Image 1 (cartoon, rainbow, N blue to C red):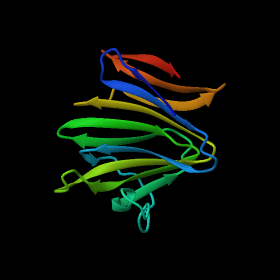
Image 2: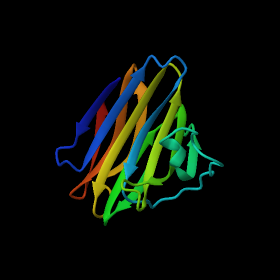
Image 3: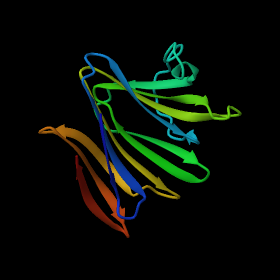
Image 4: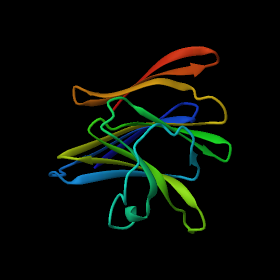
Length: 167
């Protein structure tokens, strides 16, 4: 298992590369909890039943999913007036969005699960937080020549600056 993170200089976004090797056909889940609500609910199918029969994923509810999306998927959450943009790349897996009990379990929070099956799982993300408009646009993610690549345009003081992060 290897995880690498690249922070922006301003600290308002970061890129994440997480790889698990030697799965031998087993599944691997990447999970993120967000104490806010999903704002850009897309036309996604709903999952009938539970994501798992085992804890903790058996508690996930209101589940929507995308199976093998070929482009980066942007999920926008609102957390106490802060926007959280999660760009995920799961072309060979499934993206699940739903709710789980918080800790303590007096309310529900949003949960993102990315599931991949095979010999190796690569999870690639660009995560941005901001109060108003996102600075990161046109996000593209890929694996090229054994390297994970995130390319996007960043809005800085009215200028568009192309960015490329290679892991």
